[in-house]
Amino acid sequence: MDQTLQKALDQLDQASAAVRLAVQNMATAPGGAEAAGDAAHALSGGAIDPFVFRFAIFVLAIFVGYYVVWSVTPALHTPLMAVTNAISSVIVVGALLAVGIAASGIAAGFGFVALMLVSVNIFGGFLVTQRMLAMYKKKDK
Image (cartoon, rainbow, N blue to C red; front, side):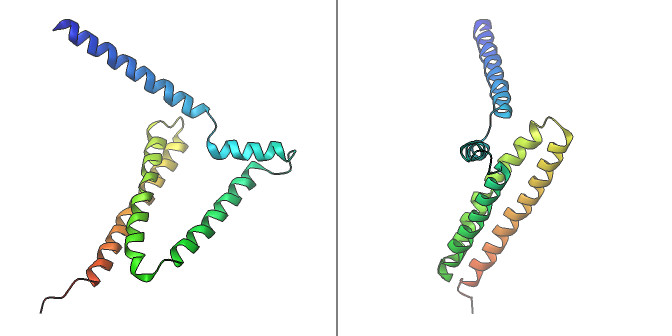
């Protein structure tokens, strides 16, 4: 019994060490957008600023989102809204990571603000979706 407990504690220590190492690597490794921005900066000989590159991707994403939403038939707006709210819950994971492993108070503050805003977005979106679905229910006479 003691050997089993000791073995479990050793495995727990190894797992927590692996998590700490992964968090350190995540904090120091460049992300995909940063790598793409740096690559564009290097390939253009410094003519393209990485911020401008990332901002251009953001603007293009806005246009794509606009055309995706407005090209959907009105009957499918409710399911589209429900799926969009479910997908935006991924932001909660990023906000929780920012709050949980923040090295500074500023990052924790921004993470907390992001968590509050995305919570309002998700719950409000599901509330609006529920009200939209209620419009299609048969009314009792």
